[in-house]
Image (cartoon, rainbow, N blue to C red):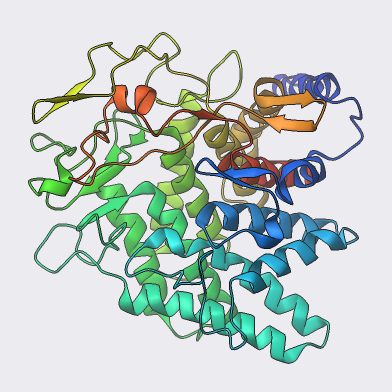
Length: 448
């Protein structure tokens, strides 16, 4: 038995031990356990409690949970209640024609140039296929129409960085963040765009795939730090603008935010894998995206915590890093005062694990190199973040939220103080961004 085989055997044993230690019924699949504990309801969307997926409003967090539940049904189709809950979620927000998606208050869910409003649309593709299989052609067409509304809104209507500026053609993260691209936005927009092209697009439409690739090539060009092998959370093409007050204005990373936020990199890593699942192998930009994926995977493996197997909220530091107690002074006002220590963070660790496992399964990442990383990570998720309570399984230690600006919110500075001590970044339990990503990671692990 060679050293690699011995190492893999030891990691598998550690994972099995973690499964048994964390769960009274270790034969139960963790994807299903989390779906039934929180995926069908009883999760939080940015601190807003949801008690039923079926009645939850349109939102990228609820959409993430719904997509994870739907993928669990695809893997375990006997769990028909999972499909029914996601279909009810979709129908709760969609009119009879499929042309109008509503928010929880009955208004327009797809706001102008708000990329966070789009990713819940990933559920429409599986719903379309299943309703078509069941002979419900009109219902299937309604979901196809809704997916097309989302794709067209992004491709044709979403604001982009203008010609003449760096990064021309890149999608704004939101209208309130002009000329800014955030790592988060790659997950919010590109996979639904790519899945539409794969399912419904013209095979000869190479331009749309080039447009998708442009988003990754642009943000990687401006946010990747080759020395640290990490991507800064966000980048502004106009760093002097008031809404970009958080951006570096000098040096080699002009326009970038100042820290490497784990969940932002998680969204980016997952987006690369999810897009490459559908991108034509012969497309001229595919090699560039595969190389970006390998760079991201290598950098994150370097930052995996050796003891726990998971990752810290701020990737370039360990647990000895704390807020400095002085906070950040913006225009004479002080924000983000505290000494909260850097911490192992659940949602990012889950999504990294998902992306490694899926990347390996699709042949995008090398099994010998990243299999041990992924297996150690999954064992770490179970040991570090899962809790057994009287109410069932819970997942703890997730960053509730994080962002940058705009000018009207000067507390969101993008500093280490902000990511550790900011008013909107506190720890949350059973947050949908951790619930959904844990389900996705578990599904990938169960396919190994």
